[in-house]
Length: 65
Image (cartoon, rainbow, N blue to C red; front, side, top):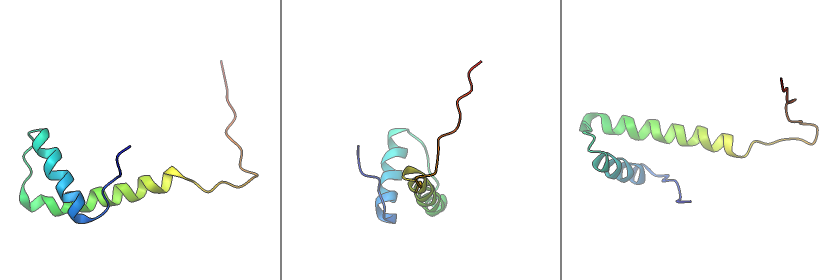
């Protein structure tokens, strides 16, 4: 899997390349906000990747009809 961009410059390049591939116009005044939102979303996603579980944590019960 490709590494997720981390710096604002990397996010900016990724946004520019992706917008060009999708033929998606991006107003330059919105670019900084898009970068900031993607950085926040990446941080949130990273926090869900490896949750710290204790020995007493159990999976949820499975109910089948």
